[in-house]
Length: 216
Image (cartoon, rainbow, N blue to C red; front, side, top):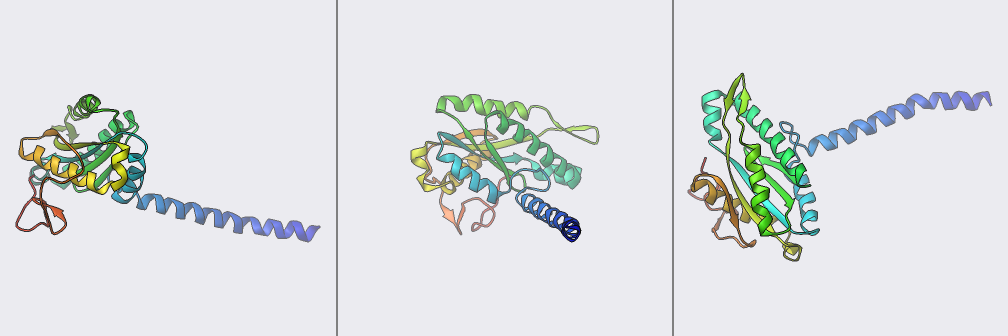
């Protein structure tokens, strides 16, 4: 009996060690699927969750890009740019949470969201709520930094979602680009079919497509 108790006691530190190792591994996996600056989902996790969401009801697919972000970095420094990205991530999280949506940072100053929206009529209300979250400047070193954005929005019904998320993101991205060259704000697009040509697998006008640069 004493030997059994002793053996069990000896196994406690080993079991605790394995539990700690498993917890640490789980945290590393979670961290790998989160953007380190904003805490938002990375593109991989977003695509997995958003693809499932599209099948559950009518959804708005949004791609958002900050206006003039390069100028913020150039004039105020990258620390200011990081603070703007961090603050925008928080504001988008609050907005998405209000609508039971999913939001991610795709990279740089570009973000995406998928939110339940029952009809086109509800889009105005949903997107006006986004504008309210951007009404206040981001405070950096005691100074307010105005932050504007351009957003492309498409509305997807579940029966249209069989093609997956990719074409909807692609369409929202090009609508965002149209909004940007028109002066910002949000624009609405229809259907998943692209209106702009694809060059090198990317929307014409995007970095990486032939002979084109991204609007800032």
